[in-house]
Length: 427
Image (cartoon, rainbow, N blue to C red; front, side, top):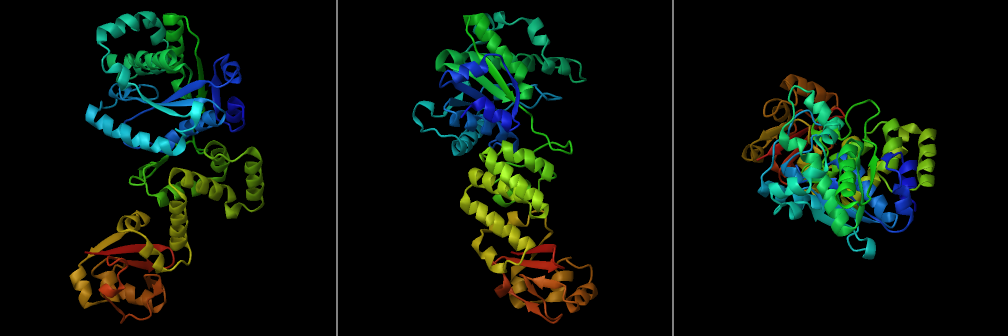
């Protein structure tokens, strides 16, 4: 497998320094990508870089994942309109542990010579004094060179300006590259296209400081076809951590992509070969309403990010909400998973003690909760057969519900029509 050609046909490649392909064609090379530890989980925006490292390793090369324990204390100005808050060492260490655990799901750390390797730039910066840094590193890169970078120019021309801390970021990242080149024979740095300036600073530092040669490769920044930001929803980031974004919600994010986006994403975020993807595209074109591309994309990335069991549960959750799956399915879920499934659905709390004595359906849906605005409205819709509790149609306005009807001893699921769900929590 040719790494650069793999990125090309998948539409991932953005820019590549001359000589990079020749380096990779000689045999196993080492390359790295840096990951920002501003949270204890990566999100789907990081997946393109994770996939780059996966392809790099599959092509027989050695991938390094650098977690920025030191650079996380500074903050990269690339693509940012203002300086971010700096994190404490304690918070950074917590975040680094979470990120490392996630990367181990995607990369093979036990593969012989080209095993993936995790490094933390805090390890080589923690004892590096400021005076030594400006003497050993700062003298090799001119201010003119640093000022010419777009990330610097854009911030200097903005209302917020740029702190000295952020201005030095490219030197710090450049030294990361130098350190890995010097101590781990790492000749290639990869990243998103917004990182080109920082990466090239590293290659320049290696050349000026030691007369060495290093290379750069960047990938396309992922955008949605409608111009909106990839990985963002109304609820915020889509995280890889199931505690932050449930596997069901993660699965739905990919399932709900547009046809145009799905064509791009299935190349970028799956390991399907070209023939498989083209066959899926043909299948999708023949029957777009069946959403073959979206289903294949959502399945592959959900299984690799979580596991097969969570994928099956996400599919069943979708069938429960949008199909004919019975209420029994909820008994297989934990309370947290049920709450995650009904995230965004109106929730109501009622007294479990009151429910034990029994509550009439009209009171339950129009007094104890506001599923209906009035008992009259509730009764009218019940008579029309449009109300269900726990996936069973309410037969009469005289029906009563008690604690025996609770799912997991805690929940009632009400429906007004087929698609309007309400979760009643008895506590």
